[in-house]
Length: 324
Image 1 (spheres, rainbow, N blue to C red):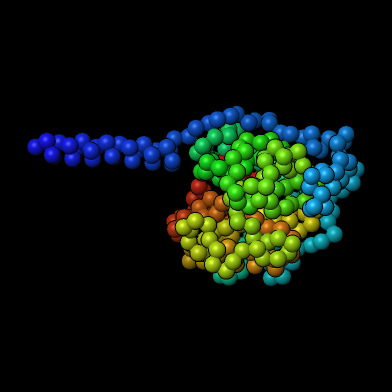
Image 2 (image 1 turned 45 degrees about the vertical axis):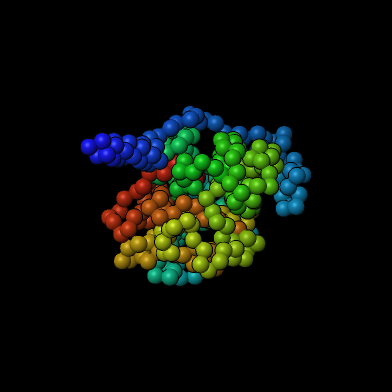
């Protein structure tokens, strides 16, 4: 009899522990810091705008003056062969054109963005909190921040490590030894290994935003991911979200559909190949799958889905956006 009692007791304890772990991982949100209004604009101040970040000299990054960033223009353009223009927006800080491509049996949406300063590439946390599993829909976070354009970010809240630098502020300085994408105050992007420098050192060198999902897709216009590369145990063909740089202050936000009868989805290598084909110099993979969402002018443009289910946004930790 005791044998059965011990067995039942052990089963109950194991079940309770398993439930606790699952709740902690997937349900319990742990807000750590209210971040509303926390933006480090000092790297864009006119008094420091002509500063050269000497520690980053190997990447030939120099901060432009405010005057040199006053016009929205770019000397380079993306390739739009076979694409359809489906949206446009322009204000004093940004010029946005939205295209739809069909690539590898998949709908791919590209926001072609030229800004007067990388200061206008902004990020926001779900519910204005930095914390574990604090989530909201991309469209909701975008609306709360008056965004004209937004994509999901790197879902930092699902991981315990990986630098989190947003709007010039360090929120997490635990490195994971992997490549991260840095957006600098001078308008450039660079792939950096997080094991080389601390998060604060990167901010001191002019890093405005840093994302730690990965992997890097394109560096110096060359594909930087293998044919069979994949994120963890993800499927080979997925909805994807990525960001890239065409030129200084000229970026692309890219979101592909997937897992539906209309769109197969892309592998990482296919995504890298696509981004290289439209002319990116640097490109980086963000959280994909059910998280992949492109929001523009009050609407969800792509078809967020998981395993072929009906259109449904998944809650995420953060977004990257352009304000109206």
